[in-house]
Image (tube, rainbow over all chains, first blue to last red; front, side, top):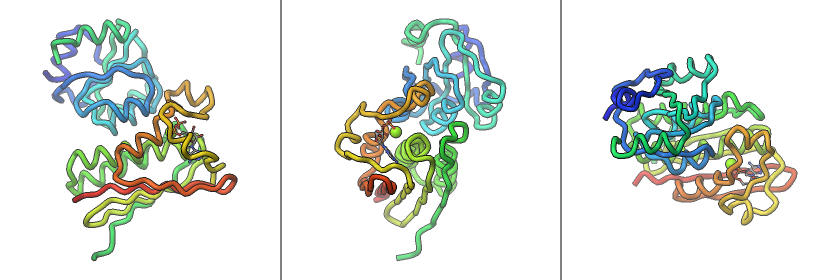
Length: 108
Length: 141
Ligand SMILES: Nc1ncnc2c1ncn2[C@@H]1O[C@H](COP(=O)(O)OP(=O)(O)O)[C@@H](O)[C@H]1O
Ligand SMILES: [Mg+2]
């Protein structure tokens, strides 16, 4: 499914969706950036609680289809602007990472 | 053999905000050139961790990426503290990163192992108190 469809199917809150039609294939959960860089696959949804600017760089370099911020973690405005400029989809989930991943299970 | 295409970047030390910009720029350029997504992904991952290492361990440095017909060479050079024990530094999970750096999500001790995993050849030339040069080669054929 696409990122936009995922947001609707899981009732997530879109933070910014500059590339809503990207396909989501599988997911990866992690907060250590090098780990995510090395292990997440292209088109994965990346579930994390990290919210600093480096998340956008890692998302861009690892080619994930979207970043899902769990536990209602929020991004500062300038980081959202950077995400938009770089075409990175960011979504917010009220649930912890584990429950967020469970919601995705079977869907992506 | 034709001359390689060369990209040069200065990497700011202790600048966590723009860290990764050189890798992002290289990724864009390689995409424009039309290299395969898998090659681009490997270059991005290997170079990003090298870039981050220069930011968090060496107060910055330079990155030179050379695109040859048959390979990509990435030379990451810094005048930082050097690495005392390469074998130890290469172990997954080994890190001397500070708590501040860790709180940003860095310092997992996976950088050098990632760089090795995603390149075809990695050499580390380091002298304590002088600096470190890491050379990565990614074969195109
Ligand atoms: N350019 C460098 N200059 C000095 N020390 C370095 C450099 N790169 C790596 N190191 C040392 O090697 C260790 C392991 O590096 P790495 O695997 O990238 O893990 P991390 O960066 O997460 O600590 C670092 O913690 C640091 O002590
Ligand atoms: Mg590192």
